Length: 94
Image 1 (cartoon, one colour):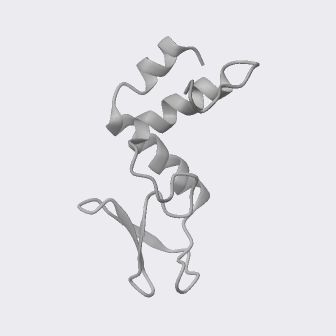
Image 2 (image 1 turned 90 degrees about the vertical axis):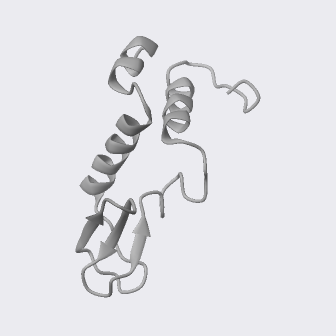
Image 3 (image 1 turned 30 degrees about the vertical axis):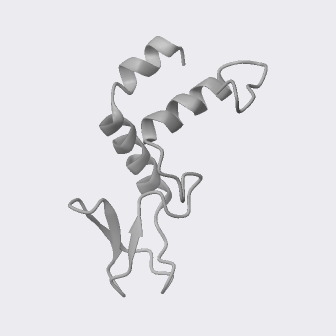
C-alpha cells in the first residue's frame, strides 16, 4: 500500500478504529473471566460485553495496542511505515 492509498483508505481516526474493530470481530473476542465467546458491542462505551457474565472488554484489550493511549491512526501509520520498506526504521525515526 502506498502512502496515498493509505490516506484514502484511512483518512481519520474513526476509519482506523472501524477497521480495527472489523478485524477484531473476524478473529472473535474471548472473555477473560468465563472464556465465553458470545459478546455484543456497547457503542456508547466502545467495549464488548460478554453475554454470559457481563464482563466488559475494551477494543484494544488482548491485542498489540493493549495498554497504549496513542490514537489508532498513529499506530496504523507506524505499521505502514515499518512494513512498506525493505529496511527497518529505528524507534527514533518512526
